[in-house]
Length: 259
Image (tube, rainbow, N blue to C red):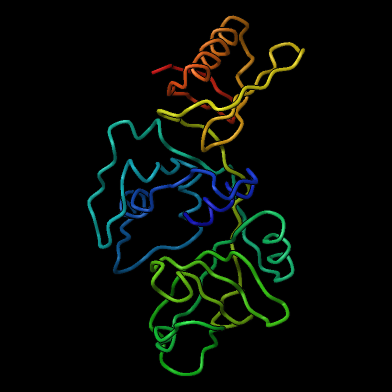
């Protein structure tokens, strides 16, 4: 989930992009249906395939609570899924670094030894202790000078370096392979959002609106009448500072309702 969210922010060139997807949906619902739980875990490829279809709902639809939970999605969950278009595996360290530098974070997994649980700060390198299992995190950067990867963990901001940790190159299988999200398919409902900007040009049906927290969205131009109605509604909503519900399909606004 962190890798998907980070990729969306990188593609939008907006570190504050309002995307918060449901870890509970991914694990308690989709993985749970495959017999996975907190005792046996899951793996990256099937989780990314699930992010393609059926996709992942927003956090508010099914908030995360630690420990195995029953799947309890909100009633309109089908209208709230975000999907990725595709993903791929990377096995060359040079390609991992290039992806991080240009496209966003990567999912990564490694073998956990008992000495990892003593990590507080600095660059982790396995010294002693037995194997305790495996763990997956989101790789967000690297440092060639000191030879380490920067990882975002899921154990809260009080752990490690404010929720992050550094791990040396080649340690514990961390860079044997990583997984990249190619793109996010922007197809879902955005509810009770504000329109903060409007852009048009002297071309046939070419207009965009800036959706607060989500950036610029093109108004679908497939139909003259619908295009004009939506443009009028969204312009009125902006002028009156009224919230709207919009349905976005592949990045373009297909429906709009002023609240």
